[in-house]
Amino acid sequence: MVTDEQAWDALLTFVERAVGKPLFGEDHFTRDTDLNHDLDLNPDRISAFLTEWSAAFDIDMRAFDITHYYPASTLSLSRFLLTVFKAPFSRASRDTLGGCQLILGMLEAAMLYGKWPAS
Image 1: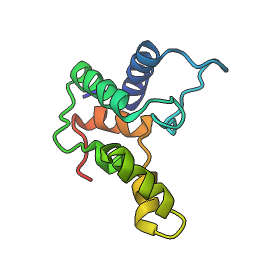
Image 2: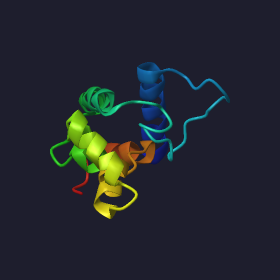
Image 3: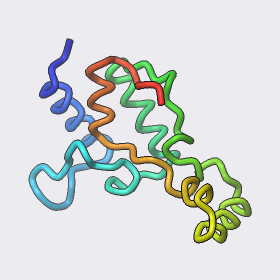
């Protein structure tokens, strides 16, 4: 079993190799670093990143669903634009556009348990 600190250090090394070191600060990555908003990865790149990460650390990803975190990634362009237009008036549209955070701390937790938790 890997410890919290070992998992975090291994994850940081992996992230730095995959997306590069932060531009500012010595250790800018935190457990709250969001893959989309902070690392500027789009859903396709996040899927590729997570595939590489899960293979590198032998993480069972059967419970992972990218659409839970980025529901708008499955929309066609016309459906996406309609959802954007409806967002000020519709909570469902705002939820579709917003999704949920996907942060490095979640990846660290999966490394400790060996699998992605069910949503």
